[in-house]
Length: 310
Image (cartoon, rainbow, N blue to C red; front, side):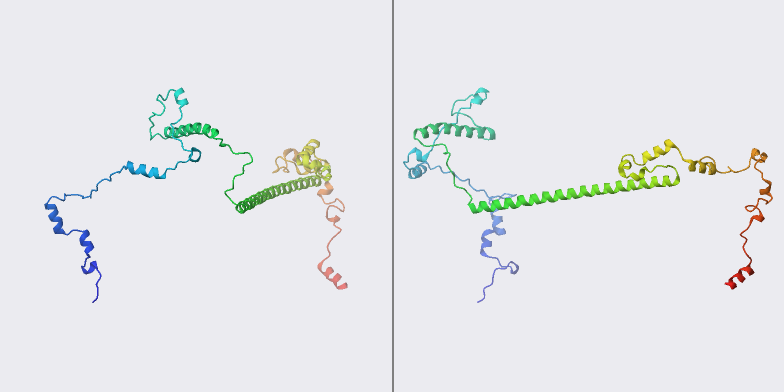
């Protein structure tokens, strides 16, 4: 015989589902009897009753309690110490052990615990001293380490490795900064040399053109680095141009209007003092006129004959 599992698609339901969920007819009967009310139906559970079994607790306490001396138990039950600060400030006006503490006030609650611990210490120290029990750690006391020596050695090695890595990083950072600074200095030196070279070339050109007759630029970078081209210009301007420069200025002009400067005027047209007859009529000797041409080029036939002779 083959067993068929419950399958909701086949329309078969288990008995557990029948127990958990009531059928429509049962729900209608319960509603007709007034057991159900329209709306959301929430099951109500009876509140748990707290059982305060005092006798049982005392019996358990008597079983656990042992008659040990107080030095082995070190238990104290006392009220908190007096709040001297509060009394001075007139904030608390209640008797000892009859304080109303607001449990919602965190500061007041923590102060209550603190004063209670303070009172316990004040009461316990004289008892311990009377029983000759030491309450301070001796100077030569060594507590047992929570970590083993091997573990601490590993931690020490890791710290050393970390410190070494940080030192390497710092050294690399300093080297990078030094390289940047060295590159900057190198660029500045190159620029300075180019500037000095340019100033020297300018001074050489001025000497070649006759604007100065001093050779100070050949002495090196002594005066050049201090004064530069400004000193050379001041020296030239102070002394003035030389004879060659003056002659060129006189011949070709220096500044002013150039266009039409060689045109005839009424005064130059009337002035015939510079007129020379020999020059005007070609009778100036070898240099001027037709008779002065000594380097006359031979004709074509003569040149051919000269080539054939060679």
